[in-house]
Length: 67
Image (cartoon, rainbow, N blue to C red; front, side, top):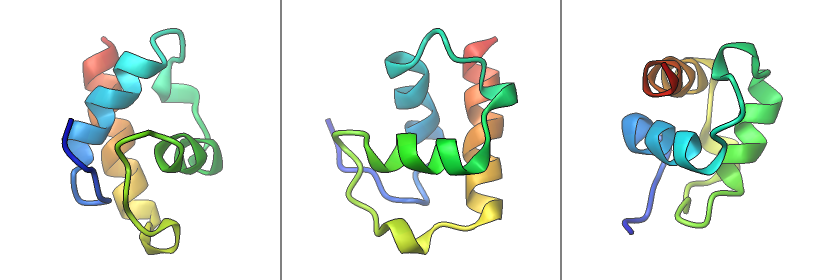
């Protein structure tokens, strides 16, 4: 498993989809999404380095993976 940072939006989305199969990402809040990403075992990014654009990109990829 590779280390993930904020710009690995697709890989983060895939891992979120694998780890939380019962969550519909369309309805997740950005604070909850941020927390789930930071708690992934393979995530090594700085929690302070995220922004709304990055979280939105991850959420959109997760929605695609979920469907």
